[in-house]
Length: 80
Image (cartoon, rainbow, N blue to C red):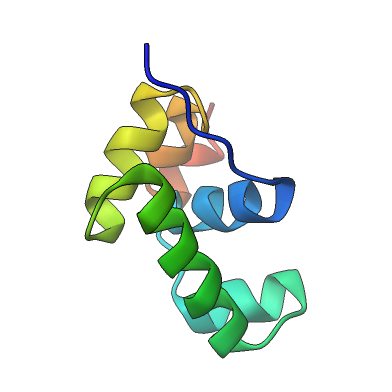
């Protein structure tokens, strides 16, 4: 199995992406600039060797970097 190392902040960002949050929303929630979110996403994409948010979510899930319940629509997530 391939191994990818992402730090805690990158994992938080990836989980927010998986939940459908925009870069602006992620920046607000994680108390960082939108540009910092974009920079981190670029690094995450490079580490995962993907080119899009959807590819990153699929690969991160496959590698166990984010939980499958992160893929549920916000309204569905709270019904778990």
